[in-house]
Length: 151
Ligand SMILES: [Zn+2]
Image 1 (tube, protein in one colour):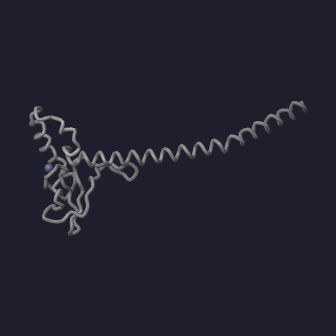
Image 2 (cartoon, helix red, strand yellow):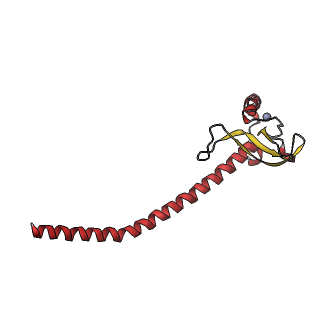
Image 3 (cartoon, protein in one colour):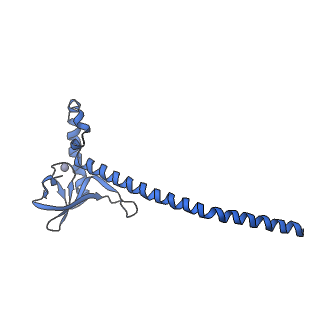
């Protein structure tokens, strides 16, 4: 994207995030990997290609998506010989990839936290229910005894 200097379409970028896809719902948010939703200083929202130094913008995310192919064609033409250790350096990743990884890492840590809390709650509940189950068992046994005495 073009916001390494914080300017897009000649305006200051207030904030940006990955654009949601048409399939995105509040329960199951889905994002375009290479399209950013950018809020500019004058209050307008534009959709911007996520590739470094690319100033391609459209009023809709769907307008940016086909453009991303242009970068992919460039990538496939790049000879493999240029691949070296710097390829695995985080600084060498496309900005989109860095943000994507950060987003995933955050998501996983949130999920881990939530799962741990659920597990703790379930464990507490099991502890609570153990004595009650025991009591019910004893009760059932004495009821059975009473019935067999009557029979
Ligand atoms: Zn682009």
